Amino acid sequence: MDQTKLEQASRILAEARHELALRIVGQEPMISGLLMAMIAGGHALLEGVPGLAKTLAVKSLAELTGLSFKRIQFTPDLLPADVTGTLIWDQKSLSFSVRRGPIFANIILADEINRAPAKVQSALLEAMEEKQVTIGEDSIHLPEPFFVLATQNPIEHEGTYPLPEAELDRFLLKLVVRYPSREEEEQIVRRLSQETAERGSSSRIKKCLDQNTLQLLRDAVDEVRLDDALVGYIVSIVSASRPVERAKRGSRDDFYRYISFGASPRASLALYRCSKIEALFNGRDFVLPEDIKAVAPAVLRHRLVLSYEAEADNMDADSIINRILALVPLP
Image (tube, rainbow, N blue to C red; front, side, top):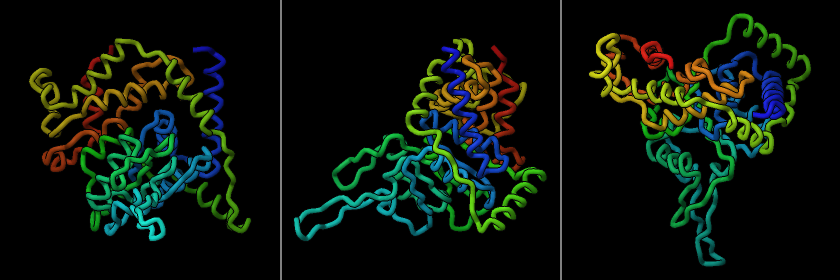
């Protein structure tokens, strides 16, 4: 990659992080994940308890890009037509016309997505994968670019509907949003006190990640080099998540009893793309094994279907992914 292009991409990313830091204190993994999903052209699922700035981060990212933004609050009584739109009878023309739903925007915040029933979740599958929706007999293309950034609360189960594996696999990344550190939380409180003193004014964000700069970053990612040996490493990691590999790998670490189904080739493609973006984040035009390891949890954690034994032994997806990374030899 040309050094000038690499420096330009690094400058854009640094400016984007700086602008987001005006609104979001800490939460670097979440911010990096959101930027990664946007550059890769994929969707992201944010999981965390209420109050960790998930919604604020998505709204701030939309403001950073200047793209059209819609928020959909998912509830158990939501209908597919409330998301995609519906046909309206026009008495004057004696014909049906399409009334488009809120999904017709560049950035969609699907807030508390696991509160929607199965019909609504299935309506999102076509939109997320095909970038179109079908209303009546017509298939209508969604705006380009199109991102679904969804949130869900992991501790609340009443009135929720677990996302089906087919829909989870459509998300490029699953970002687990953690509690802030003590120092970060003190900074959050001080910032709130300052904004209250200034009558609720909040920092405005400069639009520095529009479609042109986003395309520049994507072009830069395409020029990041990834060696064939690392392609094999990526495939080995994904293959190692499948219980069918159990007999081949022996019993050095029998974590396969915790996995019912492993990741599909879609995970390999996501690891390939995201590792190149991680290298760009680190100011390099070539991928290292550490880049692949860094993005593996966010790429794989929602693609592993765990067994009842994993729940009984308090094993989560991240623990199993760490075992896989330790098991697969470096190239």
